[in-house]
Image 1 (cartoon, rainbow, N blue to C red):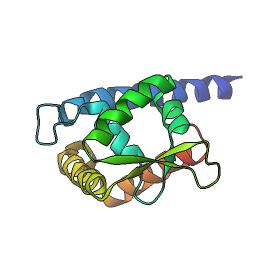
Image 2 (spheres, rainbow, N blue to C red):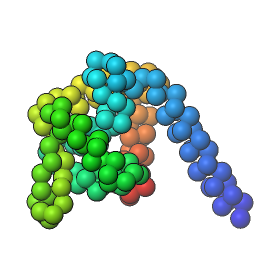
Image 3 (cartoon, one colour):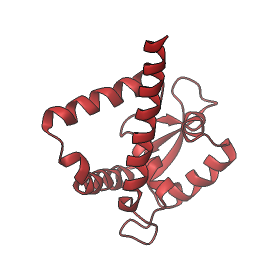
Length: 146
């Protein structure tokens, strides 16, 4: 029982620390008035779409925890800027998938470089600690927790 209680406490503490870290870093996110002229959610969508790996719009809505109609408007704005395009999914032509355009892939790379430069708390970690953090986060993503 005590082990279970400690485990729950650790999970709660980890969640609190992740949220504190995330909100402390929000000031470093690109603003809609900044060099990219994108909203934070548009930047997030560009991060979620990996070059060469189409993302079904339904999966994007699920990841963002929002209604598909909200995703449509968001994608419309990114598409009008020439950053993404919709295409039928190779597995199911009824499903629309998002693909980065070459311009979108370049902007995504610029955003990632900018974020990496500004992540001072992470850069202060040793290389081994950063690798450990990446492995932990990848494990969460791979098992579908994120």
